Image (cartoon, rainbow, N blue to C red):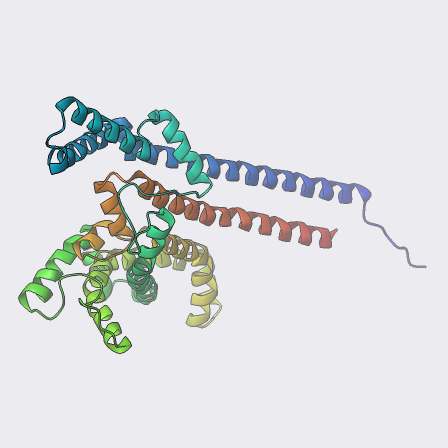
Length: 377
């Protein structure tokens, strides 16, 4: 007669307790991570507000500009020439007070900073102080959205080309470690220390000033071509120099970084074991080198997508490219705090979303662990 054995009750209870303990630890980790992300975003935005306002010094500059502008406009107006000096000065003071109230300078800076912070966290970007969109709107949201397509076009083409070409070339170099091209990339990698706008200036001097084959800057010819094909060709012609400068500034260093990363994984013991078993080189590369590096590659790709929002501030300014980077540069020069804060808050939220993806990965891993553990009970 067969004897049916039951699994020990103690072992089942121990496994359940272990799974519950793991669940509590991961939940605690997720809660701490999300809280840390929120606090980091709040602190980063508040510091941006303080820096953008220079601790209140920008208020002094703006008050001086307002007083100078209003005083010159009234003194130079023929309608107020015969007005008594006292009445004219009273009118000047009234208009100055009205303009300061419109901008919000009559409110204490500490109160304004927290108002900016509260509005930024709820994505109420408000109105710009000095800048306007091409349609004449002062809404920060419309100003940023209007400049976004130009930045996505420039940064998207250059950064996506840089990413995919770097990964493919680095993988090829890791197969031929120590050959001529590998040493050449290592030798040229320090050239990536030069910023893209520096390359941009040289490209302008060579191809625009000397050879006269490409334009100095801008996004399309003026006036823009009405034919869609001519417009596309004009856009491509203006896109070449800024895109090439962005690619050149990071090309060799990016290849070197990925190549080193692939070499580290290709020297692991399990890779040598797979080769010793006689697995084809392509299978070894796909299963034991590319697969472990995918998390790092995907994270780099996600960060690349996020940095498309910021644009290339100085490079866009050098090439007069009407994107978010040049808009931010202009906002800094005009002390337009809502534009600066609006651009920063969106970038901060995008970074937080990217980091929260790791938290979601932890939850998914926990779900698989508990599911597999329940199946084994």
